[in-house]
Length: 536
Image (cartoon, rainbow, N blue to C red):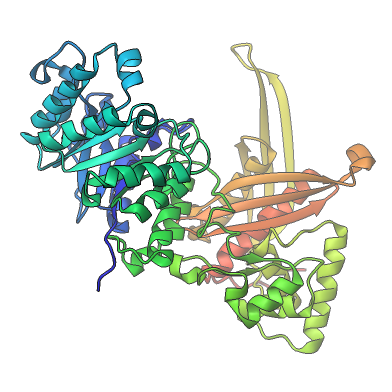
């Protein structure tokens, strides 16, 4: 017997665009649509035709999709107009999308207060708009805005709105928790009432996350029998966001046994998709995001790590590889030999007892100085390989200098400029570079890349995505020791963290930056040039 099918409707290109600080370009929208198509969602909502020039151009030249259906979003006709005489509705109907989704009020209070319409007029607006859409598209959906609040206020009217859309030809009736204030037990109770009147194969759920329950509310609805879920990548959306499809998809498939359009192979690419999506938007990926976060399967305490090595299910609810993630046995001053050995084996290293002892001693000594490797796994790997003498010398920094200048520009504006000068040796070649940057660390990074990229082209695809500073021994004031953590990423979807510690923040930053570049070259299999005898 086959498992029930859940249909996935992605609203990232519209709801996600309402996120504060997110502005999709036309190229962004096309690229994201293709990523969603490869993932296996059933519908991709492209936006609101007529709302802005980018959405107009997107529907004028839509991306080629292999399996997902493109949906155009709009609203039912306005008060006092006919469906044939509403320019906003016409723009949606003329977009040429195979699926049209129209939103309309399903709360009597909102109809009378926000729209200034009568209840009967709103029902007519829904029915006439849906009929007009059915004449122009292969499939029409009705988003019942404020449905759950409307149902609490007047169940009969909320259901009447669904009935009007269904009779007019809507294929799907989507129950919207528009202000995100409904809780899972309320969703279950209300969905059960709706399912007594409408089949689950015609119902969807669109949950906002204002109480942190968008995923739970979506799951509550499908457990009652609702068969479509609307959401966004990484939970993007206005205010607190929308239901996160990145969390929902593996939960539906791996936990509840539902079938979706996402194959096992696509599910294994979920971690990379989630992280590269955030990075493309210049957002730091959430390390603690369920399933796909860098810390989702990280184990620090010695007891936990030892148990995971015996049986991963003790502290891991799924095999990380199912979603493209990986286990991380963190190494810190709390770690014993079992933790350390487990981490080394993951790296493909099998040290003897003497090497293991030396590494453990080195680790504890460095952490006493302020290094923290549980949040800098790439630096730990390099430390381990250096103790075992297995890290190539890709480059040597002979010297660097960073200058910060604060002055007024020609417009009289106060500006701060950073300039870095580096002298680098790679094999028998020496490079002298100068670069400006947005702050001293960025300037140093740019100057280093200028020297290294001609020899190591893969560094062109590496970028710094986060930079964090912590002051150690703050009682020492300006003489305190500084710990710098740098998070880097590349076009392969890899994300790695490195650490540096020094009394000088620029020196600590260079340590972390040096490790970040070295780790990238190491995993890429870069081969350093031969070093001449003149090297000291």
